[in-house]
Length: 203
Image 1: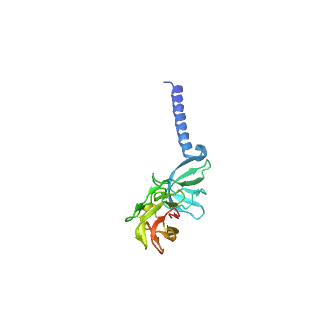
Image 2 (image 1 turned 45 degrees about the horizontal axis):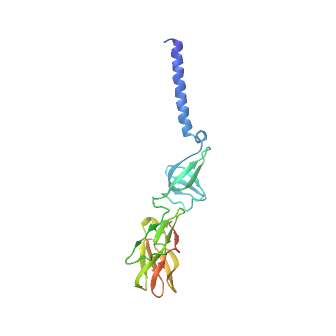
Image 3 (image 1 turned 180 degrees about the vertical axis):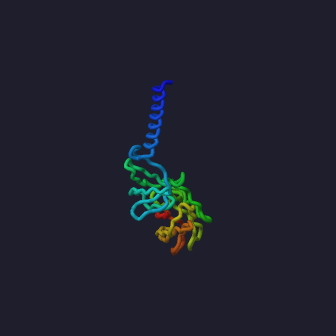
């Protein structure tokens, strides 16, 4: 190999190395790479509309990302200028957003057709909802537990709603932090419990 050929080979290797380094740098630079997104976990929630991820990224929340909480698994997007946006939380489980049957207490049961079966749903906005008509045990004249919610569907604070328990009989529907759903504060005999009145905060 001549000196000229040797120099050409060296220059070719140098050019290859520079191209590879340029590619790596571009992949790590938003202004070159363009917008991108990924998953992240929330470490802290700011009072200025931002969250900080566990790997130190500060991102501004979209208006639809309400009630952020530490531990949320979210999607974050980075612009070409390197600014981060927190798009919102991902579904916490495969059942999120779908109605799940309640686990009844004692001899409470579903009323049946034409009413919805008693169920709960975790909504995408930090709330949960109940639905359906539950049949009360015979001679229910005092506080009674209808069902118990799983941990992920329990409120951070006690929630109370007005509900109908029989023709002319109304009372309170309490959803407690331990997951129990109870009818309480009524006079007369409860025949059923209407659950569609309940939508409550999870945190």
